[in-house]
Image (tube, protein in one colour):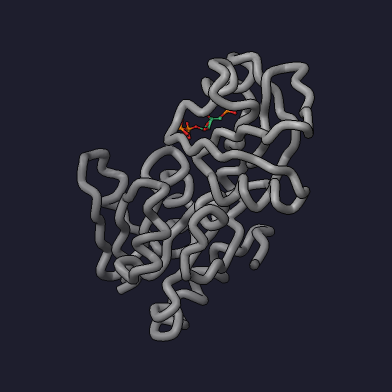
Length: 209
Ligand code: PRP
């Protein structure tokens, strides 16, 4: 039995459809109820719906053999997992944004509000800019408007949230998409199954990483 952690929500439904098409169906998952675990013994799969930011925790600790997590989470938390495939869905980018017309003044430490402290710290270290991280848990866009920070580091998908708050992208840090990840021990003991899943999901131009 392959235990698979999927991110709850719209992206997860899209991802499940990919797993189904890859030959790992579990029809009961489409019954729209509040259940979180679904099993198809014949196909050898058990799916769990978990909070997207928790998928890597389930996989790292072996509660799930494989899962689908955003590259943002993998960069931020660096879980001890194998990253097997770029699923090329859930595409967005990690970016620096600021109020329109904002210019950096290098005489001052830059105040950066973000949920992604490690990504922000690594990025500014790479360009040698001194920063002060203000770690927030959501509604990051509000920080520069209220003067809590100069810029934000956050996910930009359509750009609507930035636009509606009079912010603009200053710099793209890294493109983001959903990745297939595997627990290291599971990969050793369920190699054939996990490799088949990776291969079948990879058909259609997705890149192996
Ligand atoms: C993310 C991100 C932005 C928004 C960007 O938030 O933090 O707020 O999406 O999307 P857009 O460019 O299409 O407007 P999310 O909805 O994931 O929740 P969060 O506020 O908890 O971060």
